[in-house]
Image (cartoon, rainbow, N blue to C red; front, side):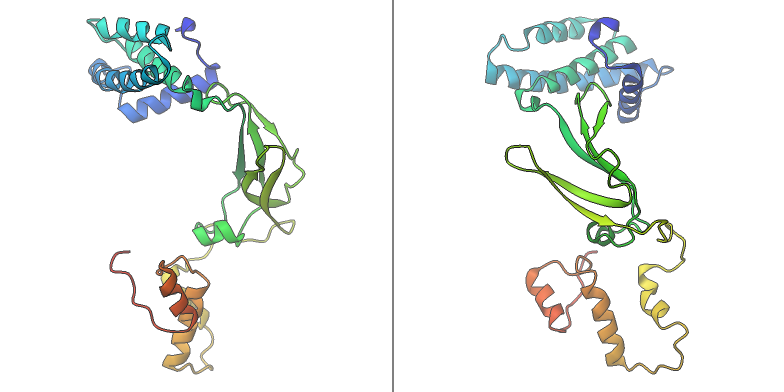
Length: 249
């Protein structure tokens, strides 16, 4: 396989492991390799045909010849399967649309409580992560640390590039050090238990049914993405009007 332009060994191991999980192949089961080979044969022909129709028959001519040789093999060995998958990958990365150079991405420490509200509002955020540039997309895991650990005391989200690619805008929340946010599953309380947990220990406080409705409404308004999605229903919630729960959840 040395002549196939493989990525570095550690990256290649990750790629091959991903292929194995996706196709259900293994070294011990040769039949699984042949079945996967036949499935990916058409999946390789299709993008190659599309790219050649857009850029001419001479585009990816070597790849087309290699695909023809692999398809003509009578015995589909594991080596043939791996060569085909690697060829398919090379064709995908040869698409001119993939020629955009470096890739900016954000690395984050998961929130202490897994919920989309926490992820976007900074609630229960934990410090760590950073802003990085993937230097050789598809062929290496080598990254460049843009911030050089200058914002390690907080958590950031959704970096956006300016139109000229020279300025990065991002969301950032600073966090106390040491961070006192509880770890996941540190409390047995679930979303359904929130109301009862709020008045646990408040036996001297008498809440009417209307009071309970207002507290439940306040909880819904602070998790606007839960239960209600249509703008008109969200406005009804804000006015304190009852909104029927969705039929499907």
